Amino acid sequence: MSDLFTLFFNNLFPILLAACIGFALAKWLNINPRPLSQVVFYVFSPVLVFNLIMNSKLSNQDILHTLAFALILMVCVGLLTWLIGGILRFNRKMMAAVMITAIFMNAGNYGLPLTSFAFGEQALAFASVFFVISALLTNTVGIVIASSGSTGVLNAIKGLVKFPAIYALALGILFLQLGWKLPSGLERTVTLLSDAAIPCMLVLLGMQLVNIRLDGHVRPLILTSSMRLLIAPALAFGLTRLFGMTGPAQQAVVLEAGMPVAVLTTILATEFDVEPSFVTTAVLVTTLLSPLTLTPLLALLGA
Image (cartoon, rainbow, N blue to C red):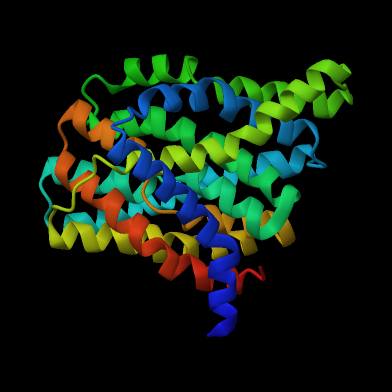
């Protein structure tokens, strides 16, 4: 028990404390999180991805394996959720809400900092690739699911074009493959902005939780929480065996798979009117429950 507490205190507690600071700022000073969210989205996140990939030791096979792994994992989670939701006879809107909350995890604001604290820079490079593909799928497939396929394709394409981290990933891979280096001034700028990314993500996570309220349906909430915090990391662990992923790669992708529901799903639910109260509840509940599942997961992964 003392080992689990140490894991929690050293890895999860700093994240929760930083998020609490963001929550307090937004709650008592009435700060709008959107400006910080835009800075993280357009500046800090892509710079972090670029810096991690450019300076990593990832091979082409590592990158492709991680991208394929993330895609297959989310397809498996989606299919399983759809089957169980069908058995439970969820209506169309609730099915869409459960699907987006079960499939899409908080791989950025929560997953990247925790991976960094627990497993270091090499695992963080793998996690950044996982984050990019999960964010891309949230902004594309997530839109299609939330809109029930009516007008989702066009919006998905627009969202994909506007997503800066995909360009950062491509540029980072180019620098990595060709062995290019930035001039000293640019390198220091990239390092400076990259170092600011994770603290800003954590504060933003807390700020985004201010407007979330505890209200929702019991059966869908149990399904989403189970899929996101228990079944998804179990599936991920099995898939790493099939992909032959070990060490930092396995640690990164399994940990990312066990993250709570992505905050972005609340925006999708509100925009397309798919049970927004349930989706916001799922984000809050899985975030609050996540230390109970992530702490033993860290122990299992050898943190």
